[in-house]
Picture (cartoon, rainbow, N blue to C red):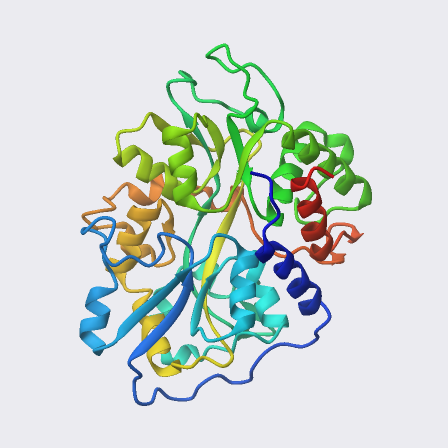
Length: 388
């Protein structure tokens, strides 16, 4: 259950390598779209690129393949570190990168600048996201925004008759409302970026630490955060990164509370499971994801077609309905049969300013000058998972 996977170790070495590189990738981007290839290969989060295999109502791949007489090939990844590792290996065209991966990919010269003149629908993207710092460097765009949302506290409604209000139920050992301990019945995310979730919890409950930003931690704040995570490890059932395994754990293995994506919540609710979610009083981390193109993309012309396709109104609305996220094209919030006219509000449209969006921690930070960099987050989180 607590085995350290090979991919985590590989990711750690990759991260060390990326932070030793300087500069940014590419210059100018493609100037025109040429002859279209027969394939486009995409690394994506589970549930982000659907062809109707799970639910025939959710399919935004088949029409693209018919339109361009091509095949979309998808490789799912459960963590940002896995995405970075796959993009470092190469052979892929695109990746749906979260903010804790995108700047690493740019500084590591793994992705290329995007020519937004080749993206006709660019101006339809939410203006708050067009120049976001996790994909825009020195005025150059290295991706096209895709979706955003918050990590939620997913819980079993038969155990919690009243929704839990705090992340305490997954960080501290306690007796739950059903009279049983939470030990062995809660989960945490299998990724170093989860350290920010613990820091956000401490920001609220231990103000004397002076945490201003969960991604900018000095040595004292970082130590307190690791101590909390070591305490949490004693009660964790599993560190999850596979959404479908977590779904099974909530269905069959007695897990009753965990951080999760709205995707898992939606799937479990659709299966008539006693599941709901909440945004606790401490707030939440979240993700604003960007579709980025590999610097050596083997199918760049078709990849550009997908970049445009990815922000069409129907796809954006359907994806938001399926994943429980918020579209980057706000026009998608109205008139979508699957999402409904209140879907964007339900999925957190009004919470944009309340979310601490994932981003890669660096040593030079704005809130206090010097912070613990991400490569240490990776190695230390592996140690926490290993019981050290």
